Length: 265
Ligand SMILES: Nc1ncnc2c1ncn2[C@@H]1O[C@H](COP(=O)(O)OP(=O)(O)O)[C@@H](O)[C@H]1O
Ligand SMILES: [Mg+2]
Ligand SMILES: [Zn+2]
Image (cartoon, rainbow, N blue to C red; front, top):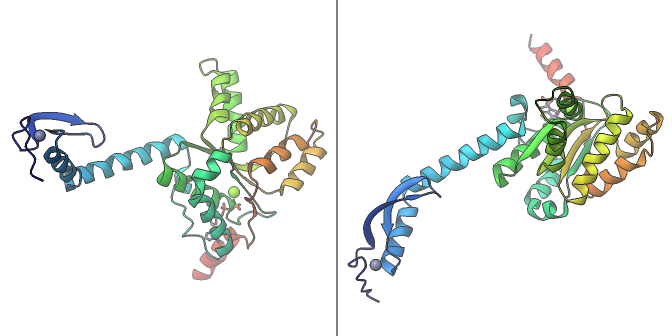
């Protein structure tokens, strides 16, 4: 159907330049008629626009990675670079693919193994990286101990509000806590963690953990530290990570790497 548009004299262009925020470029202003629509779509598919969109996305990912505070050593870790963990990779990929649904339910992940060097932090950081790359979701990644340090630091330094720091962990869209239970628990830490997990559970905000304890073991550990009501934290973990409480089996990779290096010398 031939269009007959007086607004653009059948050119599709209005003869003016405008700014398009979706690609951060200045381009022609297109007419609202069929011709203008076609020309606009053609421009959107052009190499210039596509490249600019890719660049914006890359910058957004970089910003989200910086915001997450994930250490650079762990930024490089991927599921693909994990050897001999096929079953675990399958489950983690199921989580990543279903993230939009799990996110709505506030479901995260609990990775544990009795020994260290099993790849728990590797997997945790790979999950954080993937969620940022695929879904651009703002994440915070640190050890449980670092989190307490941050809150304590704010308590001592009046320039940083303790409440604000505390809320940062409560409200993070996704919170990654590495090495849960690695250091001695105190009543203060217990209260802080319970408060943060409570808030996150009630608002369905996914939380991810690694620990050298199974959830049962962690509860026993709290019990032996004479913490009031030790089941409070673990019952929240069960609810937050249901379906994704995963034991990371396998050998100590740090030892394996050291052994390999030794044999090369
Ligand atoms: N299955 C694996 N394949 C490849 N590298 C691994 C694997 N498991 C662990 N690693 C590597 O070994 C090192 C120790 O793993 P890490 O994730 O810190 O263990 P954990 O947190 O269980 O103590 C890391 O550099 C990690 O990338
Ligand atoms: Mg670790
Ligand atoms: Zn027109």
